[in-house]
Length: 407
Image (cartoon, rainbow, N blue to C red; front, side, top):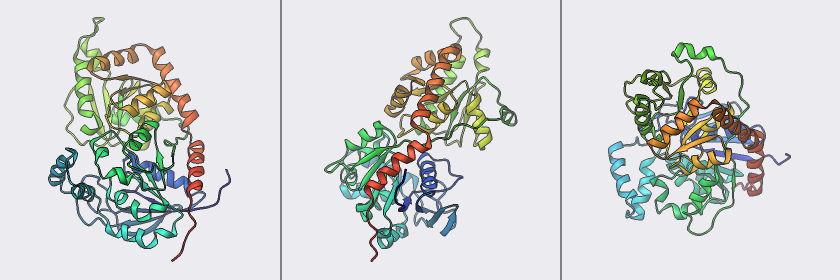
């Protein structure tokens, strides 16, 4: 498509190729592609850890490829216990407006210099894109440049979305960019007043390159296995997944097969752990894995399991379908259930019994597994290739653009 070049700013809480985060990765991937046609500046923080917001990257400006990256220092690390106590008050639903606003400040990462930059230079950008509604830089930054702010909320059905202060906040941006239809419905139900114009883009994927099965040898993994890929965290449903899988693996199969046979089909969990993982014959925790191992794990998996109760878009689910791998997803998450239904590429479960039945079916019935994997791949080809995603986004941004006004 032919469109005018824009001066764009992307604001995100963490930024870097070594950061394993959904919204952070989405921002980086979109920004890199926007930068092939537009002038793109990244405003971010010096934090690397999303729990403490500890300053680890150097502050200042540097070009990363075509991107102009400007990092601002975090002035206060998150105090976990104090923030948890504040969250209990706010999530109970009766906190004062000032207390709700304080929640966003304490959630961080608190970067007043980034806000000062928007105050001083925000008018120089045609549009300012903000990733993730829940963080300091978005909640306090959007109102500063509201006439040219585009919010990518990455909203999930967790307690934070119900904070009353968001009702007005969600009406402020010039536009909204959603990842799924379910996310759009979730956010627009919270809006008090004007509903901003919006588009739905998801995230793009390249067709998968050939993976090297030999990359699995150093980590001691051989098919068949069930794969969980991502941050290993209770908030991602991992405690429930581990409990369900151990119960399934230890149960004597209805056909009289041995428990040892079930233990031979491990749940391989690849990603940084934020919880203890039990020692069990059917569990394999790999920790963080590099890109070749990650691709081999996806390409060789019997199926992917996505247990998260909260998602705005499951990128790992799309990545599995990109490899024609079927999936088993938590139906209690509307986004996952919607993705599975639209693609026809996964089975869903709401409790242990449904989990066990679906897992047995996917592992035993090869034809069903192949059919689901093929449907998922076709869905990705049709909806989530980068040219389609970026054309949708750029048309929307051009429709919102503001003339640059120099003071």
